[in-house]
Length: 317
Image (cartoon, rainbow, N blue to C red; front, side, top):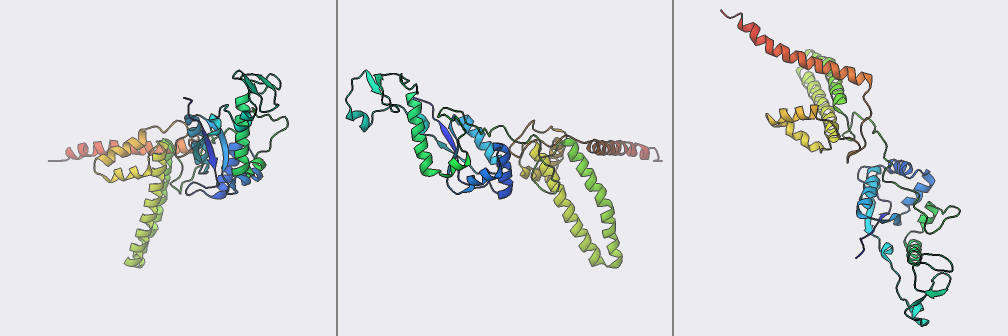
């Protein structure tokens, strides 16, 4: 029994939260094609982007398309499993058990894999015919999307591999839960958030001089904004580890939350792309300096925390 083969089919649907133009740009990069050809993929008709794949190959192509924003599907490729069988046309011309007729040129010969007259591989020729008939019925736009080059043959390999063409590094977006950031950038962004909060909260505190109500409103609004931005930064750090952002809820659990926060701080991210996108860009000099300042501040706070009880104990009578 032959191994099952699969094909990747796309009908123009997008992954949740992905804009149409973004998906088109991503697909143009994956296929190394122009936008005019990519637009034909969104005609609404199912188009077979890749055929005759093993299951693991199909899964890789599917993952690449999903990351690009295209909601493609994996389906069994029945045409890839076709074999030479008797048809009504064959039965009309009686022949011996040791002879056969070429389906392309009509040459009669002893049974063989190839035709001795025109040289085709017979099973592949029949499979190719079935594939073309299916494409003509369900995907008329596929021909316009990928016109056959000069000298094209039925046995030419596919020209648009999509499994390994993801961008090397992702984009940095501080004010979103999408994307990934590494350990040093996590520390740097956290320090920037704290430095921005100090004067902003000072201004909000000054609002109490005008009115208690004004001061409370300003404090609440700024606190909510800081929490939201902090959650975005932490979720991107979890994405770098390959974890869901919902795991951030663990940090509100006493003791366990502190340990989990430490794990987020020291554990290295996924090497290479994961389900949340490509690797974050390399750390800049500014990121390294800010992260170093934050680490130094934490170390100084620990030293002071240890030294103060000892200093105060010497003052006791």
